[in-house]
Length: 76
Image 1 (cartoon, rainbow, N blue to C red):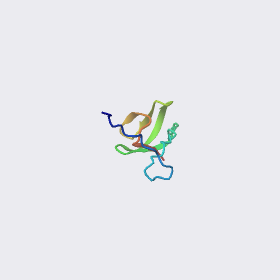
Image 2 (tube, one colour):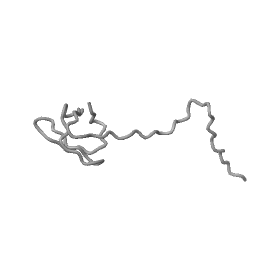
Image 3 (spheres, one colour):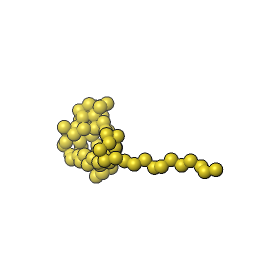
Image 4 (cartoon, one colour):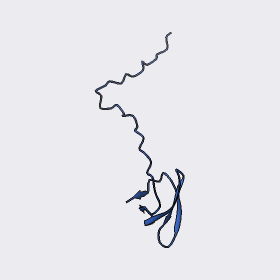
């Protein structure tokens, strides 16, 4: 008795179900004195940068070190 094996699915070039390959978005770069906004903490100013690792942001009553990339942090 033969076991049933399904044939691998072919991806048709015109199919609307083809998933496009993910394009890597470039990470945002921050500099000292950049104005930023955070979804939780609001408006702030970048006071320090650790290249590719984190940024230190002054939100008024508090200063926070936020690791990058952070989806909630946006440069204005």
